[in-house]
Image 1 (cartoon, rainbow, N blue to C red):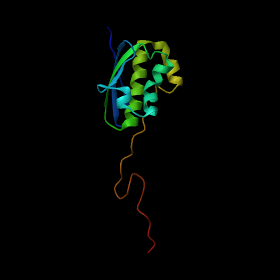
Image 2: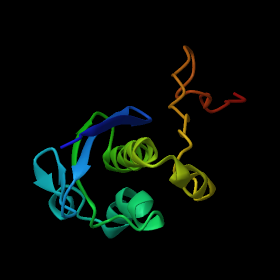
Image 3: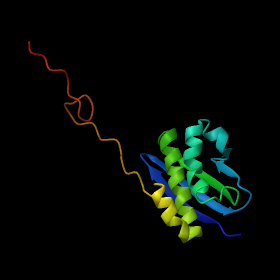
Image 4: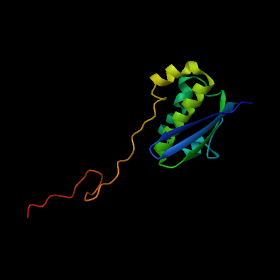
Length: 128
C-alpha cells in the first residue's frame, strides 16, 4: 500500500499528512476530525480539497499538526492535503488552484519594534 506524504504550513503551524487508499478515515494527532476541530468552519477548511476532487471516501488520512492556533493548523492541514492529492493525481492541480487550496498563505505576525507598544502602534501622544 502506497503512502503519500506532504507538508503544509500557515503562520506558526505545520501539518504533515500521510495519505493512503482507504475508506475515508481522517485522524489528526490520533483524534478524529470532529474531536480535534469541533468548530464546523475548521472542519470544512480541512475537507475542502477532498470535496473539490470528490475523493473524500477514497483515502485514509493521518495528520500531525503542530504549533500555532486552531485556525492556522486547519489551514496548514488544508494545504498539506491538497499537496498530497496533487502528488496522487496531477490533473487535480488546476481545480485545487482555482479554489485557492494550493497557495501557501505566507502572512506571519510582524515583530514588535522597540519603543512601540505593538509592531506599529505607538504610545498615546501627550500634549502636556
